[in-house]
Length: 160
Image (cartoon, rainbow, N blue to C red; front, side, top):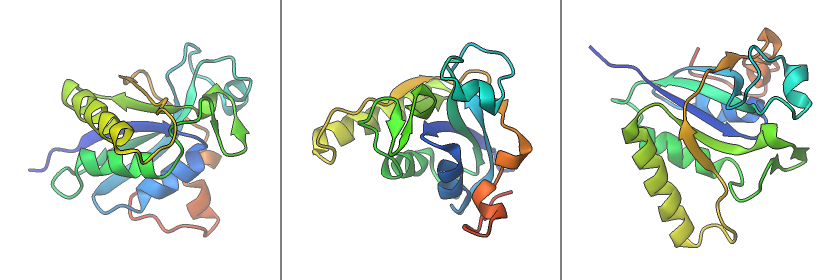
């Protein structure tokens, strides 16, 4: 019996982050939402005020026999600029910050090791500002945000 594992990442607008992960073999499901803040049950409008402390995040369920957590971390660091604080491209605000929300000590160690590896590699010209913090309550975003790019025919997801 396969044990399904969880991963949660924030890397800018959750539409693009979700589309990157939903196409990966071994990713079973993706859900966009909000995490890392202090406001309970935030709405998209609340998070956009930049006052909730939440980041736009993607909760992932995956089969580690098909795709490793390390591979998901590599994808995470490849799909955004982890050196920009509270922004990705034209999206500005703390809700767009870079975060690895770890679900256990093993994920924390792997995320920290890979972050250190990338910092030492010179791949990025500036210091990585990605937070590596414990997973907190994940609040599912409104339905119209779920699989947003897939619903518009822009990406094809393998996951549900």
